Amino acid sequence: MSNKNPKNWGFATRAIHVGQEPDPISGATVPPIHFTSTYTQKSPGNHQGYEYSRSGNPTRENLEKNLASLEKGAAGASFASGSAATASLLHTLSPGDKVVAYADVYGGTFRMLKQVFEPLGLVPVFADDVSPETFSKLVDDKTKLVWLESPTNPMLRCLDIAAIAKIAHAAGARLAVDNTFATPALQLPLELGADYVVHSTTKYIGGHSDVIGGAVITKDAAHMERVAFYQNATGGVPGPMDCYLQQRGIKTLAIRMERHCQNATTVAKHLQRHPKLDAVIYPFLEDHPDHALAKKQMCGGGGMVSMVFSGGGDSAIKFCENLKVFSLAESLGGVESLACHPAIMTHASIPKEIREKRGVTDGLMRLSVGIEDITDLIADLDQAMAKA
Ligand SMILES: *Cc1c(COP(=O)(O)O)cnc(C)c1O
Image (cartoon, rainbow, N blue to C red; front, side, top):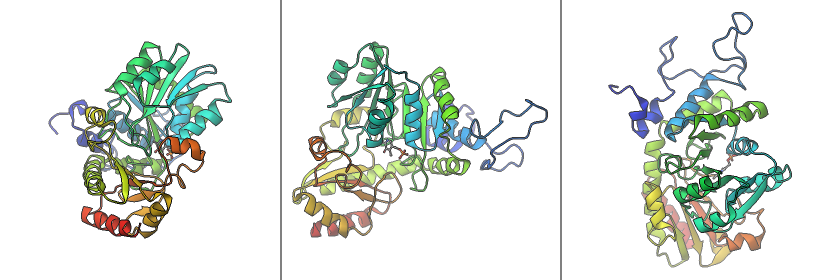
């Protein structure tokens, strides 16, 4: 490689090489997995930078460097799950601090804000629509953090990261963006003004549905201090094997996202005017409510497609039961295509009335379009549709 400064490398090159230098001892091209809980010291306090693997492990550090580079951040911290990453970031706040979040955030994030951190004194407030104006009415001088996801789950609404960052900063608050759905291959929240990126690396970053993980990436190195403190102090760290699996997944992130976008676009367009559907939701379809914004802040529409059956729950369930290539399963972002019925599966804990107000009706289905041959995916959808 003639250009030795990774900052100048393209995304796919950084994904494959940052934090992945050959092992200095053996020359192993793929760095070894450091399965160790502890590190031998030469004399008390005389060590090589590692003392205990909750505090630091080379395999984890390689992954953290890599993730920071992909998100164009200053520093990264890896966690045992996306939820552990979210918890560590929320721990940096103090009782009385207000957090303004979009109402339709990931269910686990909503539950954590309401049932874990509100009882400890945080003040979560929820914006019930995506417009920056709504956020600007809720953000005040007590607000320390604004939290959003874009695109959202499962309605795939997009929120204006740059506009909401300005609103947060004007009030002295920071902006966290959960970038799980878009990934840094399609959207760079830190470049749009966010201070933190959060990931469930369980999804596209790991990409193979074989590992649970999470990460926080900060734009400012100083902001990582508190996050890293809670990572070590509360201990929600990933093991070295999990870090390795994520790292291995990341090496193909660029090419996977390309194919996820291609396949999802083809699926969305194919289903768009299907007589059994009332709506097909995909950010890069022209009739999507946030289409212009999606095109502005993402370089691909992503791999998720949602759709609404005219026949309601009965049609949706028949469709699910007849899928052969798509698996009926929760989660998303793996190489294999998944279908999910949010009202019964991922969003069952939300009261029906609130759920339906957000669009999560019994006729809604969410597809995580994988990277199989598109002809097989379309054929599978068509035959299941025929029975719906
Ligand atoms: C899955 C998910 C999470 C939670 O991550 P876990 O790894 O399951 O703890 C957070 N945010 C989004 C958008 C998710 O999809």
